[in-house]
Length: 228
Image 1 (tube, helix red, strand yellow):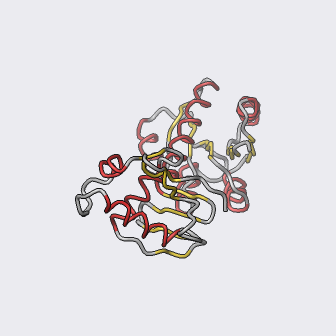
Image 2 (spheres, helix red, strand yellow):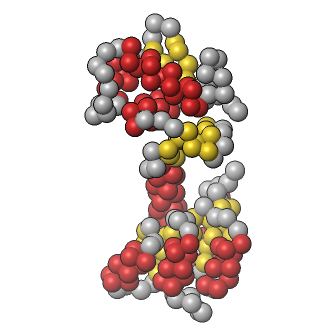
Image 3 (cartoon, one colour):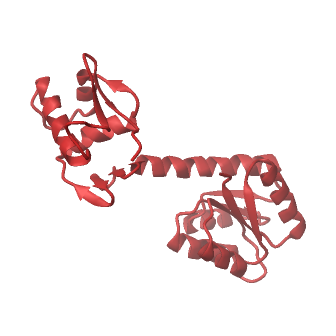
């Protein structure tokens, strides 16, 4: 599905140029000519990123940025014709992810927009891994099934996260030991099997017939992207 971009820009000619160029690149662009209209759209609809002009006829772009950032983590690329470096600093402090002075090449706008989207996607991916009903929250160090937390020790969580990050790859016991160094564990091979058994008890519907953490005989374990 095409990513949706909210463009808040009062110059109709520039707005058409940006809209045409981003649309050709595969984005869906929604245009707002004022800060108030942009804020209203952002409140009612979901967007993947915002391209925001700093100088708007009604609300200063910095205020728009501040209001949006207070309630949403949407990536923001700020545009401005002002040449003062302090505007750039203030914009970034208000929560903008990047800053592009006018006039600009559409190619550079596209490159910067893609860059902030990549960073946003990477941040989400690193924080929470989702596999159907299963969520593995790195920051909270919590595993959830259908939103309900399942108990795991710190080591078991680290072990599960290491496998889930590498879903589809067979990992030997030695590889798993290396990936979760620093956690307390008995230093013998069979201890991995005990922890895997407890992980299965926490996340599998039927631990005796696991669909997530699969034993590969003679090789190790693989976290499978099973469908719920």
